[in-house]
Image (cartoon, rainbow, N blue to C red; front, side, top):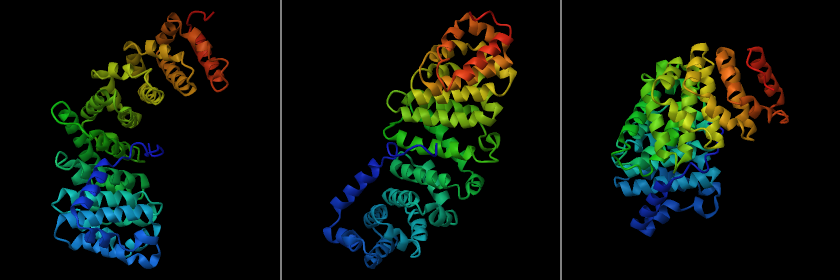
Length: 397
């Protein structure tokens, strides 16, 4: 999901609320001092004021001043490239590493906000991420994501996005994997799923999105072994389906994120494929078909991952009545979705010839033939019809 636009997903209502609260409670002199210099015209001669702001964030004993300075820094980083140029050599990363250990939730959230802004810059991969990885920040960020969520979900959200940006940079994901980030985040997901029915879920989708992405992207790393990183794949799958069903109506993007993680789980893990087929999760997966273009594609990709494991898996898919919903959406004019269905049907017919016979009995070929005039699909449609014929299915005429 690294290429997906985050403009709609990357919301920061917590940060905005906190910034307004700080401005309201601080004197104008404090605020003006923090804003002095860079806010006026952005000349590099004005930049030392931002260094003073960062130093103040570490020195001030009152959490209100630290919070103000941190959000001022975060805002300046967004607006002015010159600020970032000066902050790194003046030690912003060690300062943030110190501030994140503050006992105040508002300060922790402020650190997360600054980090998330720094990590979204073009210079992040080459200049910022290596410094963060050499510090204690990743482990401190992980701790804030996984603990005291009810007290400070804003800090958890900011730090989760920060971890996501670090992972997407791919500077040293093997280090992050060695620090057991995946097991920690998987445990968090399982715990959050168990809490949904008893705990307020306001804003939870803002945390789930980056956490699920972190796990999915680390599982996609070269050399990553799902079975070694995810101790209990069944528990994780159950948790993901809890989120899918809970957020389907109001937050469809969470459904897509969870399906992407399920895709990465099933891509290389027979354990996850077996769990998907043997648990009571499979009907819920099929029910997602025909709901939304991207959801359809992701569900079909998961089914293809499962079918690609061989004959036993294809026979199980067939016995679990996968053909009927496939034929149902085969009538869609969505070229991408139909192409994925063709891939899945090819695997099913190859490993489970009785599925081809049943396909004909359910008038599948008639639905299939309507795509013969679609340039992107016609060769694959012809090939599938030929496959059905070679397998000895009844005449398609």
